Length: 256
Image (cartoon, rainbow, N blue to C red; front, top):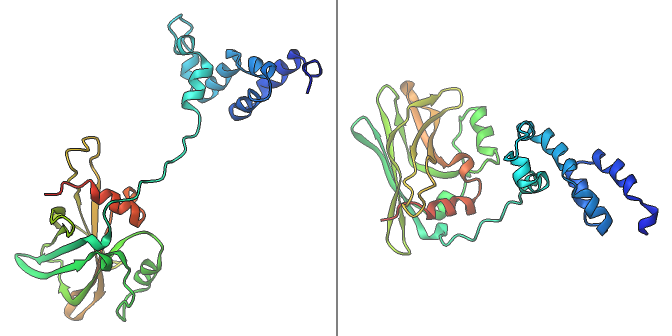
């Protein structure tokens, strides 16, 4: 399009009506459009809608005066693309999970579980589980699962605790996921008991903290008013929602 067919006055009338994304696109059309779209008053209007406080100061040291509203908007209003995670160096084939459950001071369950088993779901749940448990097992939410065999009984009149260690078979180092944490929350209608512990992250990652490892006992009714445990679930909530994310998180643990 020739510049004479689109005078600068028309651009100045149209550009204030555009949003930031469209205005930025117009800057790529031609030099005339770019020069017109770079006018700071256009970007000040957009900044005033997104961050009204940035336009309240009229002093020479105001944030918009020092930086320019176009630069301010361009740097902080754009949508950042999420980068894919790098491929983890760990694999579930490299891992072993050491599970211990206590009822009071007595060991109720103790086993070593290969990583590929934890990676899979419980394929054959026991008969008699409630409907909410059936729906939970069918859900697509990411969780690592440990099938319990033989099943054991618990009564929550006593403290029920669990510890969980992980061993790397590639270099024989060990990390602690859960350090004898008590199942303090019993969700009766959902037939689950929950405990958590904060992950012990390597000192090489000082800005990563307060990530919880959650464990849940999967329950079914047993005789005498007790519950029977047929599975154990492990997850990190929003910190890891896939095998790759879970392995990347496990890599930064304090392995010793």
